[in-house]
Image 1 (cartoon, helix red, strand yellow):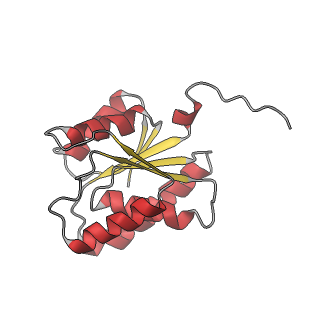
Image 2 (cartoon, rainbow, N blue to C red):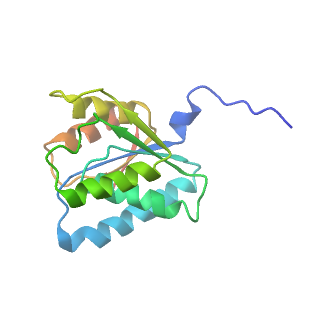
Length: 164
């Protein structure tokens, strides 16, 4: 068997993060999911294997579910959940907690950026996602909030950003 040498930083070159709003207009849900699927497939064709999602409701959930669906046709891809803390779902309704648990159970890897909730832990999670990625697929419709901040940070770090 031949040895395989992996260049330092190459995992980052094969990694895409997702960031987006929590509130998804009902009438836009299927179009957003369709565009997300197309964007992921285009990156798979470029050799992107790792897909990082923050575990939030809304776009993060759509993106994570789409990666899990695509694993049937592209078994090489991996879903990595980068979560801010174990208490992320505190205050969520039961339906969203159940969906979160199902995604978490099917993820290839789960990373917590903090052992507990603190003001700013979502920010730490978002920076971690950006700092370990080369690509960003986002659902960004406004210039304020966590998604806008994350996308701006991604651009300053040289990531290729796809706003679906």
